[in-house]
Image (cartoon, rainbow, N blue to C red; front, side):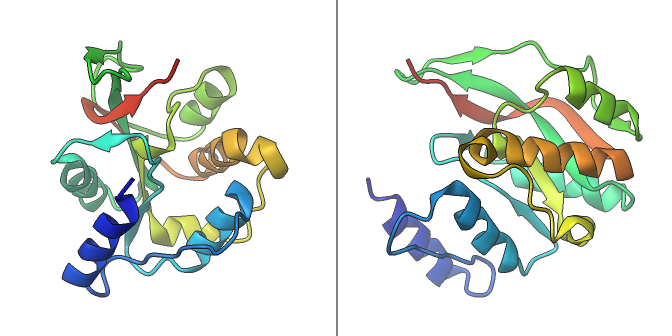
Amino acid sequence: DDSWDIALKFSQKYPNKIFLARNHQNFAATANLKNCMSNIRGRYFMILCSDDKLDKHCVERAVEQLEAHPDACMTLMHRYILSESGRVTNEAPFYDQSCKIFPPKQAAVYMMASVNPTLSQILYRTDYHTATKNFEGASGHANRFLGNRVLDFTLSCLYPIIYLHTPLVYHRVHA
C-alpha cells in the first residue's frame, strides 16, 4: 500500500518530530524494534502496528495523562475491535474506569491476562523507558508476540501506569 509515502509526507511536514527508518532487507521484528528504540528523540513514543488505527484524540489524551502524572511511565488505552470489513465493535474494558495503577498491581495483572493485546495501545514516556534501554526481551519469533509484554511487565513493576477506559485505538482482527 502507500503507507510509506504517507509517512514520508508527514515526516516532511513535521521535520524533527517524526523519525522514519526503512530497512533494505527484512531484519525481523526484534532487530527492527531495537533500531527504532535507539533512535527515539521525543518525550513520548508509541509502537504502532500497521493494521491498527488511532482515534484522532488518542495521542493528545495519552499525553495529557502523562503530563498530569509525571511519575507514570505509560498510558494504556482501551480499544475497539475493527473487523476486516471495517465493522467496529466494542470490547469489554479491562478496568471499569480510568485509573492510575501503582506497582505491583499491574505487574500481577500482566502475569494473568493480556491487558493490551495490541502494541498500539500504549504511549510510553521516553525517560522512564530509558531505565530499560538495554532490555533484550524475548528473542526471535517469541519477541514479536512477547517481547513488549515483558517490557511492559518490567515497567509496571517499577512505576505507576495510567489506564484510560475510553477506547482510543481500533485493533484490526484478521480471519
